[in-house]
Length: 273
Length: 312
Ligand SMILES: Nc1ncnc2c1ncn2[C@@H]1O[C@H](COP(=O)(O)OP(=O)(O)OP(=O)(O)O)[C@@H](O)[C@H]1O
Ligand SMILES: [Mg+2]
Image (cartoon, rainbow over all chains, first blue to last red):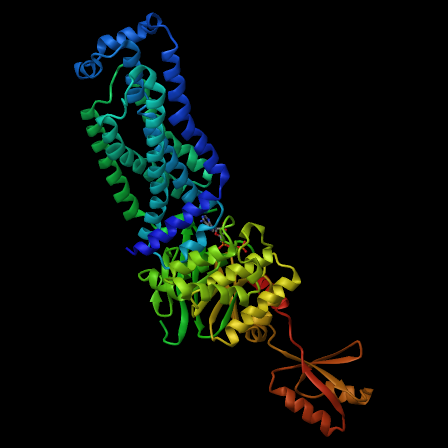
């Protein structure tokens, strides 16, 4: 495989998306909602609610069912601090999986199904690039931005929650080890999963919209994780996170292996009408 | 493959979901030829280009370009061809220069070499002033020229042009046709030209194939096709004094199969081309003064419709 070709394709795609406001403006909005707006509103709401009113019925059940490892983590904190800590560290974590997933999804769909729809892909197919270089270029074009955005989001989120939580904590309380695992282990695995699915769907799909809608459903499992955590069914312990990550890496490997092996440029042509 | 053929197709077949859209297509194209591929919408022109350029695998049959098998060596095939796609296939959000640079990179050019080539092409196609403009703002004619520049980037010996002048005004079409002529005459490039513009084919092509419903129904030089269709040769003779005696004399000549007079012009049907000098000799011998003798030719359009009619 000629990496020069892979990088050339990826750079062109990124440049093209940068010129496409209809893609990156909604992305920035979602990005700001997840990393700034939601956490700030949540923390401020807790800080401005009387401690006696914080302990609602669902919260009571949650605290009762909490595994001991979690109880140990929040031991010695005030109720206010405990709730902020849990929200910032656990409840919002799935959002940070959804963010890179959405980015990689929309980039991959644009660079594959979008290019197909705009009929620009045909000339690219006639170049002396191999099928593998083509698909790798497209994957890279979506993977790199999704990681950059995830890390920028992570940094902004860390600053925002520490600043907003400072009045009650009086110290930097975020991030802990879980988030290191999350960012280094899960986020790339999940992004790869999202874009692998998007690329596979894009090869067959007739239009950008179709590909985006079908592949967009990959966020559903993460919304499920988000909800299951809030209702105390699961929680993202470090072990759980490591295993979940491993699972995604295995699935990624299978998708990419099949994708790069089976992909033929003729398939794009045959599905291009 | 035949040594001398640059493009060789043998019994190409392509099916989409069981529907046969290319049906046992065969032909050979020599170096430096402009080969016209004529046919109505949906005949299979674009699909044939895709089969020959190694991006779409044939269901049956094979093809070679510069000796490379499109089935087993598609990458090698793509290295030696340039393709002007039917739709412009340009990135509208990028500038002309960025578009060319992208493809240049993929052909292995970099730095100064890349820049020089881009400038050379932009100049050749008269797009220098627009080099920084987004392609989305270009007219159809400018896009066609830029696409042609892209197809030529790596100076390929074989060019596939899929309807290069469709959607262009007469001036834009002329400009492109001049470029094509130049590319073939001066640079000895082999050109496969898909078109449904018969005048264009006549002007540019040394040989044509007519494809209909995925099948080649005729192939040859326009003159050959004409000869096959109209076995008799017709000449228009311009005589000084075409009096009745002379006309009667001509009509009664053994080689003359038919004669008609149309708007004071004399049209004479002969058995073959070889009879033309005999006819001239006879008339001169009889004392006739000939100003001119022209063989009547049929337009490619007439040929095209006649062939399609006959094959129905
Ligand atoms: N990817 C595809 N899937 C299904 N059918 C296809 C596909 N590509 C082409 N066809 C069919 O094959 C036939 C030939 O199409 P093709 O595009 O090669 O025609 P064409 O001669 O280039 O026509 P036009 O002059 O309109 O460009 C058409 O009937 C078309 O519908
Ligand atoms: Mg076509």
